[in-house]
Image (cartoon, rainbow, N blue to C red):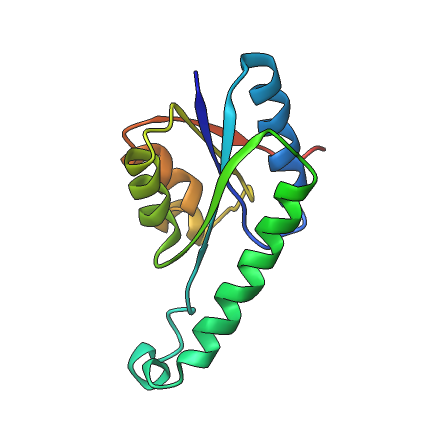
Length: 140
């Protein structure tokens, strides 16, 4: 195993997901590639916002700053970081293949109810990704 794609969102559990991936990478002598997907919630009219690119620019800049801060804490372990605009599960599956990653590490919210019917990002990645996926659950 040489490359692990680590999917980090803006939630409080992201550092734990990264810690888990970093521990695994150290044990396997692998490199990490950090990914954050940003987009607008479906309730916001994408067409109306298309002309106000500054909103997406701000979201991308904030995501880039977060990933850079995470990478700075793991010198020599992080091979790269990428912010992708789009649907998270699709961006993850695309980058895992494009970057030829051996493993995808993603966090789980542990949703219930409607999300179990519609599917979460983690479940869509597990079902659609061509790479192996490790779902990190929050500590009890």
